[in-house]
Length: 501
Image (cartoon, rainbow, N blue to C red; front, side, top):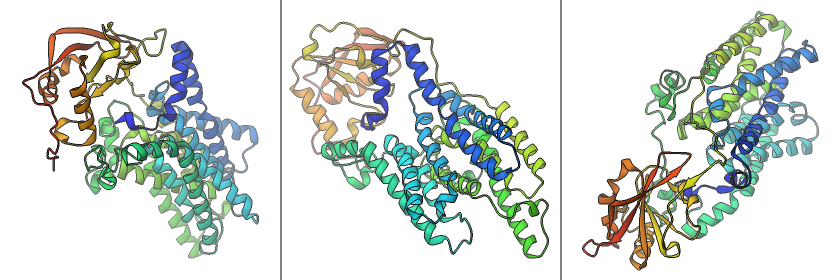
């Protein structure tokens, strides 16, 4: 599947890994990911300035830095440092977009419409760029865009036309960012595969290169309303509800509890005010800070979209980083004295920080290069095809082979001979039938069953007694086994074969 992902985000790492030692590459990646502290501190400063206006500049700067640090030390985020998932890289664009909007309510609702629309267009462009680089960022773009419709600065109805235009222009910025960073790749996929999102949504685009399915991994998406409602608590109890590794982090669950509780408190204060009774602390704060409300609503909308589409925690890491800011924003709205709000927010931030347990994405010892592969010499590299089957990740091993050697993935989570006469299967079958040179099977030692279940479907047989190791610094040794054409075996998949219904 990843073969068809937009490669733009991977190119800087690829170039760095080609040119620099692994430790230097790791340092650069960690430094880039560490830049998340900047927008986090900016967002924290913005919320604190509105929530605690009497706080001095130095104290506010220190508090903003501590809130940002609490966001950066989340269990999901720390586990991703130095990895190439990029969820804590595109987060720079998501958090930057939120910062631009949250810091500028005076401009957004001021007299100058041009400045306001330029501001939200820039913010939309940032998060749209994130979506273009990595599509699972979409929930954050939706949340940041539509939050304008729900949060007002001043009278709600009177400001709606302005807020609608702000949301619309933000959306145009999102589309511009997506077009710039993924337009070229979507055009390539459309030109080659007749689906700009191939293989996703192929039930809609009907590309002949794949089966008519959405190719959507929804195994982590809650299956019922009750499960969806309790989801943050379910993944605290069992992290594998939302991913493949063990971790613990309470940032989002705490924010999840605070948001409806804050809504109830604000509703109660509003009712008390209508009845002529000022709530505790209410006299000091006549209105709700716009930045805090916007961030809370945007986060809630983004979370709901994520819950419906993905349910994979790694995609939620930008929200995990933002959660301490949201905790401060929510508590800042409570109708209690400022000291009580500050003490409660500090206690909650300490709680979520000290209880975090980062995940471990199978970290390994440093080697000279980020990726090191040792493959056996091929006697005829100009006339060789390497076949892949099974579910183990083996494509990265192609780095250790001569560049002219083609690789064909006959079976994986994405492709299978049982998919019938789709063009991917047909093209591979035609290429195998026409090839008169050497064949090899690259396979994990725990997936040798593919030699007898997959290769015969293409008229091939493997000599599992003629295998040599392919080693790397990233995984266990894999097997490279000789493969021969078997005249007695039928070539497959047969043209016109029925596709699974």
